[in-house]
Amino acid sequence: MNNELRLHLYLESIHFNTTSAMLYINYVSSVMKDGSATGPRFQMRKTDARLVLDAMQQIVTHAGAVSRFLWPTSKNATARGEELRRLLQIPVGSPLETRGLRNVWGLLFQTERSLCTIFARI
Image (cartoon, rainbow, N blue to C red; front, side, top):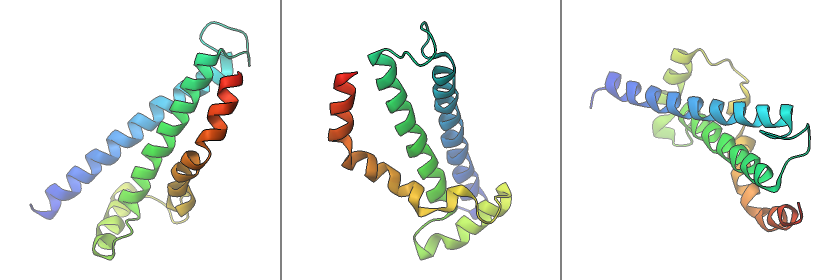
């Protein structure tokens, strides 16, 4: 596979992940603004809270995927990451660069039991 086609496939994957993350960001934003689809501000139903948690996990997952495309950990993929960042004009110091973002997903799994306990009480 030639390099141009390979970059195009990576760009398509980045587009998918950013579009998906934005859909979830818009959902969370609308729920936080309205409280729920039908209720007053900050009075979420149990199902709304679970949907918000799911949406937030999806945001982190998609953002982490974009981060891995742009800042790959494999030394063999470093040049590809640099080229993608150049093509997309990603500035130095972008929040997506931090490894912390990639580690959030693991943190969510580590605290899953606590979160389940909290949401069972809502």
